[in-house]
Image (cartoon, helix red, strand yellow):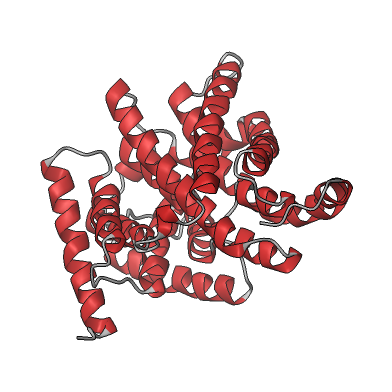
Amino acid sequence: MVISLFVRRLFGACAAVAGAQLAMLLNIPLPWLLGPLFVIAALRLNAAPVACANSLRSAGQWAIGTSLGLYFTPYILELVIEHWDVVLIGIFIPLLLSSFGTWVHWRIGKSSLKTAWFSSAIGGSGEMSQLAERYGGRVDLVASAHSLRILAVVIIIPFGYQYFGLSGIDNTHLYKANVDLPNLALLAVFTVLAGILSQRQGLPNAWVLGPLLISTLMTLIGFANTTMPPEVINIGQLLIGWSLGDRYRPAFFKAAPRFLFATLIFTLGSLAIVMVIGVVISTRSDLPLPTIWLGLAPGGLAEMAITAKVLMLGVPMVTALQVTRMVFVVMVTGWLYNHIIEPIEKKLPAQPD
């Protein structure tokens, strides 16, 4: 019996909501994100008839991106600029992590150097997959590597922070503002238009960055004196968790197990490297160590921002670190492949994926 796409998406929605409710009952960190992710991923891995539309992930990203921009008052922006040195260091850390990951995927995962490089770049899965296709890498392996990396980071960090009691109090204007419906409606119109335009222009993470930029601008000039209703934030998390879980298929962990094992080693090693670098930075900065770790973590922009928001850990700083890193990685990954990785690859014996 063939189940229609509409019915599978309806089943997916019910499962995602049930996952969030179950996660809250079990006191799982980030229940509106991790609950749907776990349940949908488990169902997808077992070939259950559930599905998610790409537009729903975009809607979730819009909610998160717009709400993040509301943090950037002039005072908060000054604090971010004051820590420009940490932001600058954060831009270049992905190059270290990508170099480490390339070696791990190449030596342990037995992939070609080009596939290893694009699998290890700490950028968006879509952007890195497109670059891999352009330069002849294995798109399926690159996409799988990024999916597993983000899944591992999204699980490890919230549970680790919960276990060690790492949280904070983000005392910004956002928690003092009320929900202003006319103001919120105006904000929604402009941020949705920004998302549409960003997507058409091919901006990475368009439905996060576009709304984030416009929301930030409107906050800075005083046109967004409101906060986002918590229900909208929860729904945004649910949609992102649902879409993350929807990436998995029954054969996901059976395809190229050695390569995925290398991805797991790379992810754990990257988290360890970030922990050490974070400790060093914290000795020369007044930023809390948990905020630094979260800002440097090799996860996705939306997922790390959600973690910072829920745990109240320096949302603007985490967002600034994650955004600048992502933009930098997307800009330089192809150039670095052309000028460094490809010349090295030509000197090596042929190693097909």
